[in-house]
Image 1: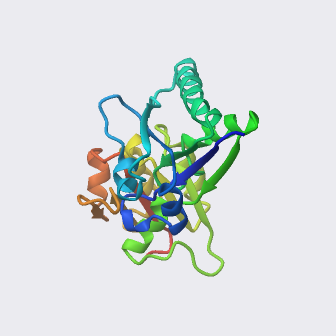
Image 2 (image 1 turned 90 degrees about the vertical axis):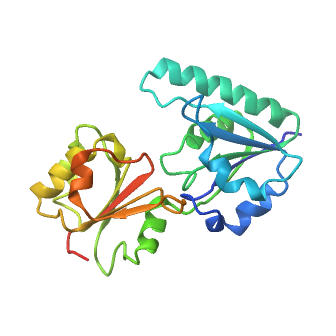
Amino acid sequence: MKGKFYGIGVGPGDPDLLTLKAVKVLNKADVIICPKGKEEEDSIALDIAKEHIHEKAVIKTLLFPMVHCKETLKKHWQENTSIIEEDLKAEKQVVFLTLGDALLYSTYIYMMESLKQQGYEVETISGITSFSATASTVNLPLAKGKETLTVLPLTKDGESLERLLPAVDNLVILKVSHNPKVLAEKLKQYNVENNFVMISKCGHDDEIITRDIQVLEEGNVPYLSTVIVKKGGF
């Protein structure tokens, strides 16, 4: 008999946004896996979920470096998968915590795919996305009627913005900190610099909401930032 691997999206920051299903699983899990991008970082996902974690659960913080080197990434993924496998072989219930939703630009996806291929039982529990929470915070509809909604991660060259911004009605932009200056440039180019809102650290104590294009132009944007652009205005 093998254990079971769970992926839990803990939402963007507010612990109250955890789903009831996520809380139930956290209450019975044997092992909690908390990913982080740097050795010196704390796990934000763990901080969000900690009050619901079973007191006897073993918490393991694993490093998933945010680098582009495929060999480095592969090495860490293999090492971390082996650590998780050891617990699954010991018939333990293992939870992998991730910010937002577990199946949206998440490190969990790679672990899930690898473990599924090896025959382990996997269950993914949805979490509230940063853009859903952002929209709710400012009471802003993501899309109405026949409007389109597109979600994209910002790249350093802004190529995807150049292609999509003229073509869609509503645009959610993730990973804004990759190049906020190019985002500001494109918003101005298509005359929508007054039609966006950005929330940084949504649901955290130091949450920031802005509609000021100058903030993007200055380039000092926190990692946990999401922008919603409404071509038709607010």
